[in-house]
Length: 192
Image (cartoon, rainbow, N blue to C red; front, side, top):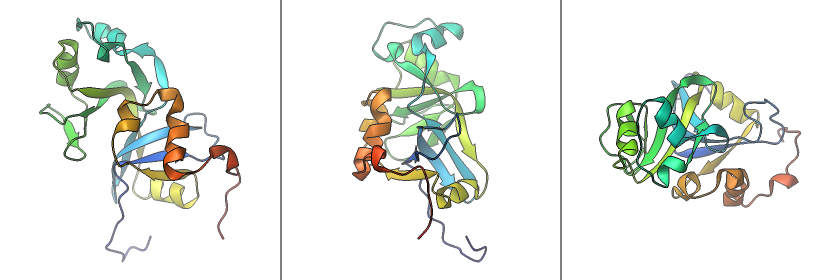
């Protein structure tokens, strides 16, 4: 990208889907929800790699007694290699929490404990996806990876894939949005 280019195309609120040739053990077959993308860098969370921990166990480790609900039995995800000791909650509706990145009118990413306390008490957001850690890129880093064909970008028309699709099918479902079968993609990338 030219330093004189004043236009920047953000792909916030898109999915990044690892191309078959991406062999990095952390990101191989990863689906990342990109919460923020600007000239300053990018930030997202992996949404298809559950940890061995469910939300009830995480709340217990935080000394938060939880009421039984479908939400507390949901998995906690490995969000990425950065700040793995910190929780990030992708949720709808947005609500009012201490530390929230508002993505759009209905979706936000929160990193403050108050949202987990509310969830433990059964009064948290209607839909949540909790991760430990996040994935981040410095200025221009993700753009370079996109130019090298490491990722496919998938626009989201709704949040169904984030909250209502089982984790084990999110990789295939992201490709279906594009109308592509991942088995038909070569692991060798190039430019015409």
